[in-house]
Length: 149
Image 1 (cartoon, rainbow, N blue to C red):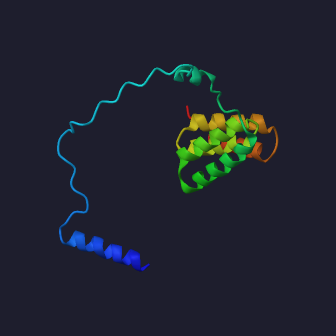
Image 2: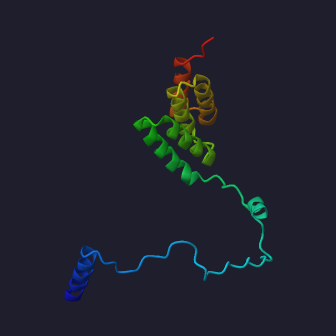
Image 3: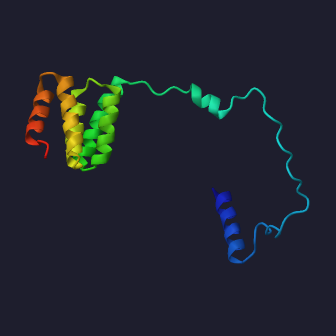
């Protein structure tokens, strides 16, 4: 520990006295540098276009749907309706039979003042849910928010 303290004291003394530890770099281009040669052409390396055509889109994952639904609900409760809507749509993509996601997406569309989109989401919720809690909620929302002429 004593060696470190002594080294710091020497550096501090040099800085305070105005001396530089390293000399400054010379100004202007250096004459001793040679330009780098062009790299050789790579063989047997697929192009980016060929690689992009082989990349598959992510497949739906029902496990992610539950996570997206809970995060969307979190965003909705905080007032971030556009973020919530994106998460609800991700949940719908990952599990198209998740009625709660459709219903919550409809509620979010209503908060964003998109009545036609909200009604469409509630209608999909009723189709997916058949009968049950979310179908009843979607039906009630449709009755409360009729289309305006």
